[in-house]
View 1 (cartoon, rainbow, N blue to C red):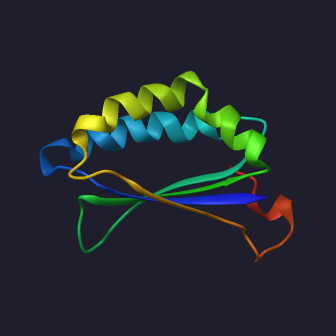
View 2 (view 1 turned 90 degrees about the horizontal axis):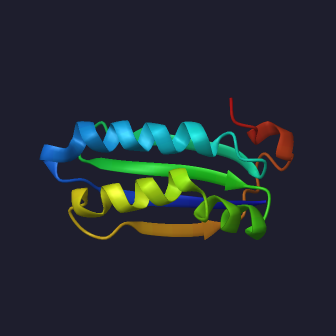
Length: 105
């Protein structure tokens, strides 16, 4: 399994539009065969700060995700909405260690 945590600062005037397109991306990403989790979190302290928490079965599943229409539409749509480039960190989920614990709703 592989995880990705993405930190995104959104320009204040785009917060609602960002949430709409990100919801679209998240809902469709959850339907991908290699996706185990795709959560979107908005900071309580700074409403313009968002985190994406994604878990995939493999590197191939991440590559599949990045080739989808919904991801590419999201990426292109949010490019001008960001205050600065997004930051992503990849890792390995260690707890829970069972893949079934992460399956998206």
